[in-house]
Image 1 (cartoon, helix red, strand yellow):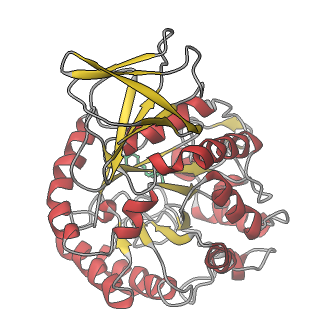
Image 2: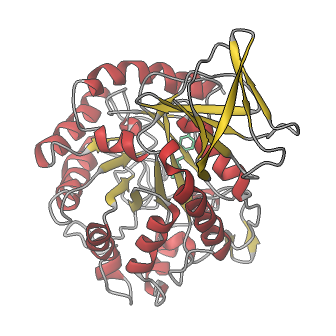
Length: 413
Ligand code: JFZ
């Protein structure tokens, strides 16, 4: 939890700057995004030379200390014939996600986009020979999803001057890597793919303030409206990032996001079957939004280009819940009822949305220090619920059976 506290202290500084701009408006409205970790690591999928490698799948090169010359060979096998940009974007849309963030370059250095800076990319270095970033960017544009990319600015285990590979490389010139490789790649990504919603930098590690600032300014010049993630380093991003899968205990009044997995890995792993339930995922989304945050939920497609079915099932179920209850999520912020275990609250204008996770068996929802004139269920908007005064608060009288087993939303005005 220590890291979360630190991220949040850093977040305070970020809010002041962010508030004055409208850059974050769409993102605050969106609340829910799709993260995609996809790259060469989907081929070994957690197993290297017959041995299961512990930990997150996209770190296999580092965890197994695979030499560059060996790992690079994976590119020649990367042929995701089932990749379908239209289907991926349609899934995000059906799930109720408003933005998509995909790993243009992760720590292993392999690029999903066509780059003049290296042939170690999907279009020039694999039998697939297609620019999947281009296909996804165009499809997102078509289907109305904000297209965003992840870019590992510090760690690059393939580049001799990048950070993190000490089994192949020794002394390095990190600044040279930033100036002659990272910046030109960011130019490509922020020039060739239309408007980019945000750049998700990650694991700043050794990057110095001056260097983070140089990358920020570089992005700003190319696309001034593009949001920069908090993990650019040195508190220079537009919003704070909570630790992976971490949710703070209470509401924060600055902009923040929780990046999260549906199972326990970002990049696909054949042996990870620890899928969270739909109920758990909806509760996490609502919990985060009730504390002013965004939920960036990951999928890890296979080497064939398929999003694992357990992820698809859960995302579609979340989308069904959001079809009915999205009003209580999108464009809302932390509501007035906080710290009550059985519910969460969000608000928008003069409406407070009460999210009931544990519906009381007598159907009576007792709320202290709240006033309201009307109460209605989002899942049955035609029938108003009656409200009785109660000791400085009120009681909403609903049915005895939970109308929605996952989260029943009551709108109070
Ligand atoms: C990073 C990456 O190393 C990982 O592969 C993945 O892309 C993930 C989304 O981000 O891992 C982190 C970064 C920060 C924290 C934890 C894992 N953190 O702040 O707790």
